[in-house]
Amino acid sequence: MSTVNPPVLPDLSARRVPPLGGFNLTALRLEIRRLLRNRRTVIITMAFPVIFFLLFGLNSAYALLPAGPGAHGNTSALVMISLELYGAVAATTFGGAMVSIERAQGWSRQLRLTPLSPAAYIAMKVLTALVLGAGSVIAVNIVGLLTNKASMPGYLWVVTALCVWIGSLLFAAFGLFMGYLLPTENVMQLMSLLLTLLSFAGGLFIPLSQYPHAIQEIAKWTPLYGLNQLVHAPMLGGSIPWYWPVNVVVWLAIFVAGAVWRFQKDTARV
Amino acid sequence: MTVTTPTSLAVKLTGIHKNFHHVQAVRGVDIEVESGEIVAILGPNGAGKTTTIDMILGLSQPTTGEVTVYGMHPRHAISRGLVSAVMQTGGLLKDLTVAETVEYTASLFAHTQETREVLSRAGIGEIADRRVAKCSGGEQQRLRFALALLSDPELLVLDEPTTGMDVEGRRSFWAAIRKDAEQGRTVLFATHYLEEADAYADRIILLRHGRIVADGTAAEIKAMAAGRTVRATLPGADEAALQALPGVESLEVRGDTVLIHTNDSDAAARYLLTETGARDLEIAARGIEEAFLALTGDDTDAPAAAADVKTMETI
Image (tube, rainbow over all chains, first blue to last red; front, side, top):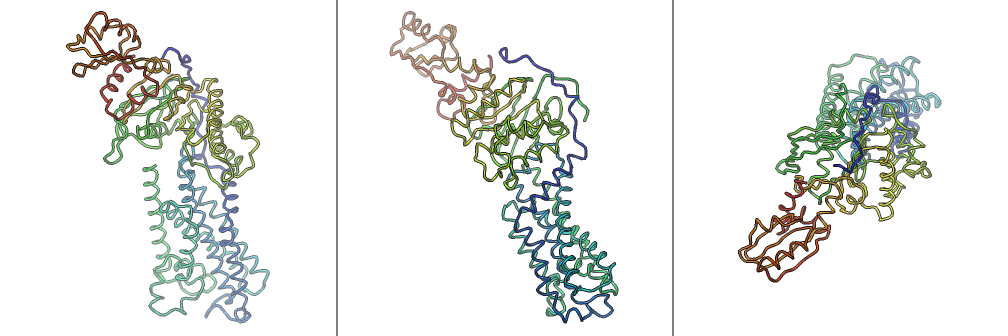
């Protein structure tokens, strides 16, 4: 190869690896901006819970009715908590499922040509989802406060909102699993449908006690059931049966295992 | 993770094989690319170009063999911003703007160049605020180029970068790459356009069915392509004598017919007509396209191709 330029020794010592596997706030900010640009995401996570609450949570009978025997709040507060949970899990599911769109558009592959580590990528996805989830929870709480129908002690507003927000991590894992499972740009439509079904099954929209007994028994096995019971528990008082937390832990294990499994398949294939 | 001893080798592939289930996409490839070289990997679709490039970029692992980039595992070289790539299609988020895409990518590296400077070098400074979804194919490709420039890589890898571009887009894209390479960047690109390899590479590696069939400078490939084929009817040809003629690259004897691939057709013709009883002499020029096809094609000229391969490898 006599005609080519003489070999130059590149100065490799000046080349550094970024800290935290490439995790950074600039990328996080752009991720959040992207999510907010998606009209469907904003409508489902912010507008739906607020509108549902305005429609179904402000019944004046609800304001007078305690949420249950020994409860610390009224029925209006119970409805508000359910819708908080719906908005928060929708946000984390969509945040996780964005992976699917990025895989379909080849962005994941592009990212593998950067220093970004898979762990940092997933951390950014989960944090983005949590930020959107927080927005949804705060929106519902503000509307709840302003409409002045939902009633429970002040500390329960904070405790419940935090429970909902942290609990929604379960669905970040669900979203990631679905995101790595389904390589499609239409994943959001599918997720909205699935979430609606799971919300009915989990008793978020209609109290489970109003379903036939057989359906109530089946509902106990669905992934939103345990979480829905747990986030209402501080307000409703009473004891917590063992199968509520078990439901959450088992589904979390399933979603995380599924996400890891699909993720490994994905990186091996590309 | 430590940087190994300084090496002038940008890329080193040793005994690379890559199988996908029962398909052998790459079967025994050895490539060494020196720093500062502009190398084309040329071959038809399915020759193993993209598979080879994916392994250089650490996107996939060889079934057997070893890949190092600047003496490191490809993934480590990428983490340090030593290597960038412009891929064929996709790889961009439609809902970000051009500037946001660059900003996002820049945020992932330890060191990057100015976003604005990179945009203008890639010729997309004016469309910084445009959504990626609204950019034309050529604009998207320039954006990919801008992303690749961000970390000021030592090695730039391009996988069929001009697929789907029009002639003008292709020309201006290569002008930008060429200008960039003048600063000493190593460039490795895959293409199935012969003219592209010819016009822009210092060295061409021809791939066929996952093997290297020729590896030489563009000038050497051209010299080969400039050769002619002298065909004559000559019963009982003295193969050794024909082979010894000046400029002969390869020789084929099919029954009474001899085919001499040579870059000195005059000498061969003179010899045949004056020193032997050859008749029905024909001289045919071989175009560069034809040479390429002979080397990479799958047709009945396979023996000729194999002969050419041999000559090329001894260059």
